[in-house]
Length: 455
Ligand code: SAJ
Figure 1 (cartoon, rainbow, N blue to C red):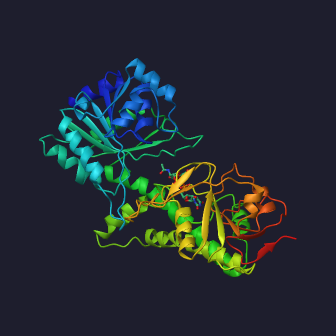
Figure 2 (figure 1 turned 30 degrees about the horizontal axis):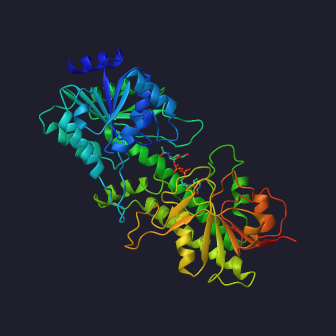
Figure 3 (figure 1 turned 90 degrees about the vertical axis):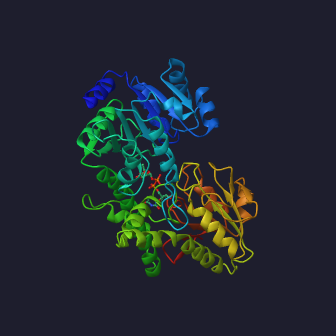
């Protein structure tokens, strides 16, 4: 009976939807539910974020301020730091961070706090959906006990599901609405209600049989990427030892119309997904005395790439009789991937640290990143105030003043012809100079010990 009532309120849009966590996952979701006609209450612990949203502005690149303003004005959306305002919600989606500690142990404190908030505002008929990427079993072991402990029966008067977030910030094609959404409930009734809720604003829903299946889907997706990127990185090392251009090998392999998917090597992997997500699964399996060797090996290969890049820089300087120690190095691109401004877990930060540890004098230029702090992306543990570095201007004179330029992130907006025309030595970890004509620079690729000294 309770299920039917909730279903009806979802169908006729009289349901109130709460979103806990208004970041790059929660805010787009809140806007989609508001667009579907629901009254949406967004909860965040940041008063600054709530004030900003209620003023009709947006702190998330993919959510236009005009959309936030329209839904605030129409009364379909409001943000609050007061959890009590979530009490009228018929459905609550949790989209809070699940960071990893330094030893790759999941930090569940945000999920636990959110689940406690849900328990505080729970009422018969409430639907709760966890979206935060986490280890399999979290929904059942962390969220469910807090609610059933309060006397609710899952599938009868409380409904719980997991639905992985697939938000790719800055993706011009895929957004919250048109990316298929996997949904798995503790019981079939939970899956049914969560499917009805998300069907109101997302084009394709993929119901699965349990929360564990849904939790594992996300981890498989991102472990798949980490392992395949590591394979591409190992191929770069293989090609380097054989004096072969790895990019040529991969481009030719990618002509296979079936049974192959192109991944490219690079200076390592960054971002808040790929370097972290697979370790949730590795951690869970360690508690079951099983070593997920692909995850751990991929992690080792990927995290060794910054040191490999530094070795290539040292070789490149050596080829022009310069020691790394004391040489001036320009890092070109510090964001974790091209055409974005996010430096979280960026391998560029590791490359800079490793170069400076060998005495190099390092500057950076990134058209999307104005400055970086030494503890950026890693939550530095130094007790020194973190050093702030600003992006330097690019000019022919500036390029000529460095002993080596290292292309770490291949932003499309950079003129690589200018780089090879004016730099003395270039280490290209992304094949960004592939389309350039011969210039002054000695260009060293990530993967061939041959340097193309260009006449
Ligand atoms: N990278 C490589 N070689 C590759 C692909 C990526 O070195 O062939 C590096 C990137 O430079 C970056 C890191 O790996 O440093 C991660 O790159 P990514 O393309 O996986 O981008 P992310 O971290 O933004 O991943 C997100 C994920 N989205 C979600 O988790 C919802 C991922 O599942 C998406 O597949 C990815 O975006 C995407 O395709 O854009």
